[in-house]
Amino acid sequence: MKKNSKIALSGLLAAFAVAASALESLVPALPFAPPGFRIGFSNVASMIACGVSWGSALAVALVKSAFVLLTRGVTASLLSLAGGLASAAVTLLLMRFAHGKVGCIGIGVAGAAAHNLAQVCVYSLIISDAAFWYLPYLLVLGTACGVLTGILLDLAQKYLYAYKKTDAGEHRRAERNQNG
Amino acid sequence: MKTGLLKKADLIIIAVCVIAGVMAFVLFSSSGGEGRQAVIEYRGATVRVIDLDSVAGEYTFTVRGDFDVEITVSPEGVRFSASACPDKLCVAFGTLSKRGQIAVCMPAGVSVRVRGGEGCDGMTG
Image (cartoon, rainbow over all chains, first blue to last red; front, side, top):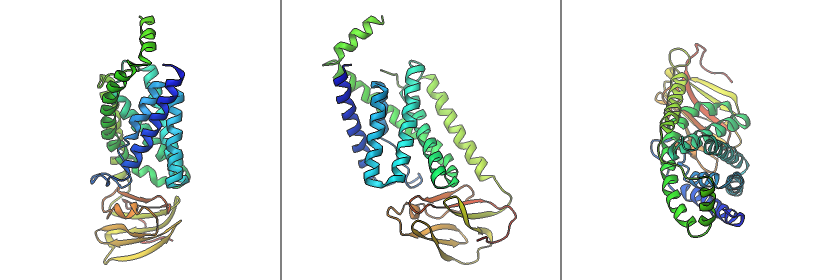
């Protein structure tokens, strides 16, 4: 993909991530989940960004936490940043070193787990160890949400690739041909 | 980068996460001896420990965190009954009655959890 297309796509993804998390905060909490728990639809955008480049992934994570800083304050923003960076790191690693072995659902679940673990660690550092007691719920529910975002990632990819064929797809096809 | 939907490695990842979660839950909910204690903490420091099995009637007290929160203790369990924080997520947790349950008020920095008793008496702090 050309550099300009990457920048444009990263911007779109960051905007989508912010919009998704803003919309999600309007939806009432899931009845069986602890309050404050969210499915993390914006992670779909983060995961797509990881497929574009690590810079794109970093940009989406930073924009997301900047938005949280403006709307929900410093603590929430730090938590968002930690979660975003951790899940981006895990997603990037999986896409790089386990490409072809791990599918969308695996990436979604691993990303969600990394997100939750990082948030619990940061929360316990800045506020209270009590956060670790939250971990069992987060791991189990986070897995379910990871499956859901993984499915959404798979669906989104289909449309994205249809889009790429129109423009940057040219470049990508050439790249693929080179690789055999 | 195009990735498939579900592969064998995905099932392993799912299994690891679920098993880790269940194990953590079993570990946390079985800690301590008989009975149930409510532990109230402010930024990691224990504010109060209440033996839930010996609570006779309902009572309420205030914890001065970064926001003031009101905690109600009853024979059923313990809950955030009111809070001065902006999002009131802590109140939405409802009553905690089983070991391993936890409610957190992030803006106030106050948490309440239920653990197994450790043979210590009524209240501290």
